[in-house]
Amino acid sequence: MGYIKSAREIADEKIASLGEVTEEERLNWKYYPEGEKIAATYTRGDCNLTAELSRYDEKVKSYVISGVQAVLIRNIDLPKNDHIKQLNKRAMDGFKTLKGDKAAVENVFSQIRRLFEHYSSQGDQQRKQAYETLKSDFTAKVQQALQQQMGNSIPVNMANINVENQPQFQEEWQKLKNQMDDQYLSYLDEYKQELLNIP
Image 1 (cartoon, rainbow, N blue to C red):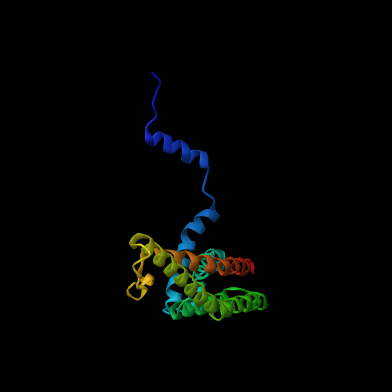
Image 2 (spheres, rainbow, N blue to C red; image 1 turned 45 degrees about the horizontal axis):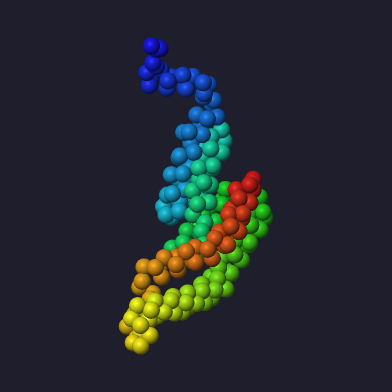
């Protein structure tokens, strides 16, 4: 019977195979989370981003900024409500502080603003139309199903049935809404990537 390694021996071998941790990795592990904390505090409006970043020397500042950017980029989202709109503004202001090429940042922001404007105006109209169409189709299906169950001789009164409260309707509406939002999110993801690539 062969020798069976303990979990500790297996773990030690895996660690040894990874090699030594570089100084860059150590700095990233330490300062990236600090940047995330700063960004979380900043998005709540509880700190001055420039002042917080000035506390770090140049050797580690890039790791802190990477953490800040990761949180700020996640806070840019489709403007579905006033809270998200405020987070978007705060995150975008944060990027203006972080990035050196202000003109490139403003160019990406103008694209994002156009996308948000379209989402809020035409997108809102499209969502309302899609909702009404879905409601009408769903009402017709429910009416047809009830007539099949009860027989065509008995009239079905749809006024007593609120299809909007039906779980199946809500599920279909959520799917449809997500499909519509996905179109905007794909553009937004491209813009966010452009933003991250700006020096």
